[in-house]
Length: 191
Image 1 (tube, helix red, strand yellow):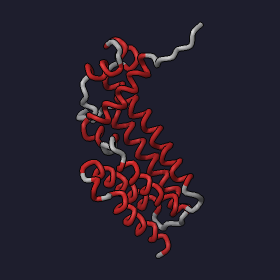
Image 2 (image 1 turned 30 degrees about the horizontal axis):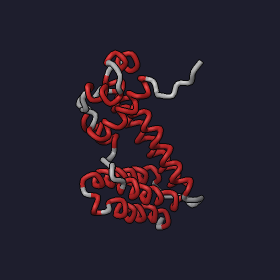
Image 3 (image 1 turned 180 degrees about the vertical axis):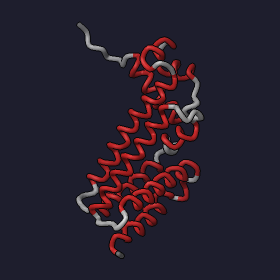
Image 4 (image 1 turned 90 degrees about the vertical axis):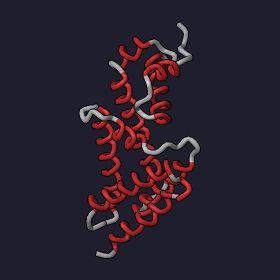
């Protein structure tokens, strides 16, 4: 028995779709996906039922990875909830500064998926809910008077920083969002 050294068709399709849907959007053509993955069209349908299934699975995969990155960023910032929340914006500044940064995958997918029933919308919504929950948990530890509302505000700042980072990174949107986040966090001490 020999060990497989190259990924199978399913993994190659996921890798290709992860790359191409981020670079070109979810409207990327099936032929381009198949070419980069080096698989037959049949593999797409066998493993994912079609392009919509592949896009949904890529969003699930990346949501898990991105949520883990939020958690790791916050954990690395120490034990103070304020520091953990502000570390998110410092990390976003690094992400936006990467040469291949193209904005928020989930926002782009939500805008591009015209069918409101596309399962990708549900994946993106649940991802945002989990990020919101992470933020809200930290705000509760900070004893913020309105943790759910403040988490809504921080998520808006995150989305805005990622959107502006894709179109005008030279404006340093994560740093500006961080300063606004500081004001939201300081509300915890004003009540």
